[in-house]
Length: 115
Ligand SMILES: Nc1ncnc2c1ncn2[C@@H]1O[C@H](COP(=O)(O)OP(=O)(O)OP(=O)(O)O)[C@@H](O)[C@H]1O
Ligand SMILES: [Mg+2]
Image (cartoon, rainbow, N blue to C red; front, side, top):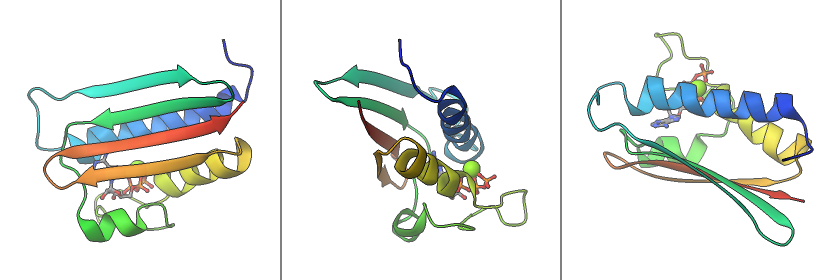
């Protein structure tokens, strides 16, 4: 049970799921796996969201949380999903978000929220 902002978590999760479907698994239809891990340390709630899809280029990785960064500019992407996610985590939830990704291997977001 978490006492927090359910709308913030819903929006965060929704952005990550949408990205996994649209970006990570665009061309990968088999063995597509999303792994979600939740854990609670003494005073840190950790939440990770990992896919085994397309991954990001080094260039996109460096700017992924900036507004309007998208590789789908002419295909409905606005490039705001990860920026909003970043703001939800850092401002609303007072936490941090880390990104690990490798082209062709997959992407992992790890969120740390102080309890
Ligand atoms: N799980 C992922 N796998 C591979 N690339 C990703 C993943 N999540 C995000 N990206 C890359 O990061 C970019 C920025 O993501 P972001 O969610 O901010 O924008 P978007 O999905 O393109 O547009 P929007 O979310 O505003 O509809 C994406 O365009 C994509 O290139
Ligand atoms: Mg998105």
